[in-house]
Amino acid sequence: MRTFEDRYRYLAIGGRVGRSTFGYDRWVNQEFYTGRQWRQLRDHIIVRDNGCDLGVDGHEIRDRVIIHHMNPLSLADLLHNEDDALNPEFLISVSHATHNAIHYGDERKLAQPLQERRPGDTQLWSRR
Image 1: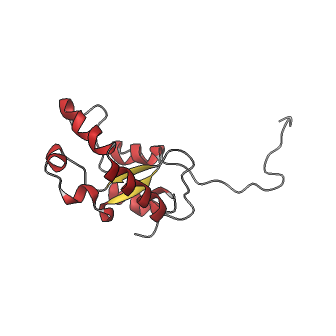
Image 2: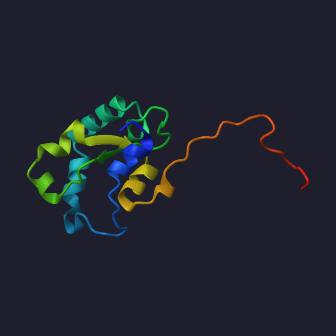
Image 3: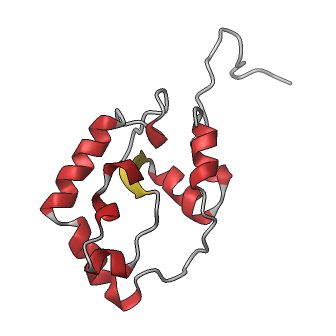
């Protein structure tokens, strides 16, 4: 998958807003993400992906970087220390907007590429 769009479409899971994932066992999730092992791995993934959204050069993340599990985690994965939870092959750097688009299936949430500005492309204070 070469393009940003290809990677996004591969990962999009089209979830629903408000659907419970860990419910009352959210503490397990929070314990995992605040642990030393996860924090070190997170730093490694950001460096590996050059701080780029979906690891695609030219899509630099300019705000908070989220490390996305390509295979959604379950409570059992965390309770039984499944290897996939910490396997770099199943992790990717994403922006907050891309993470929401992946989970909630709304491509409109993806960051749009910057348009190169050219002289005369805007006429400020013009009368129409």
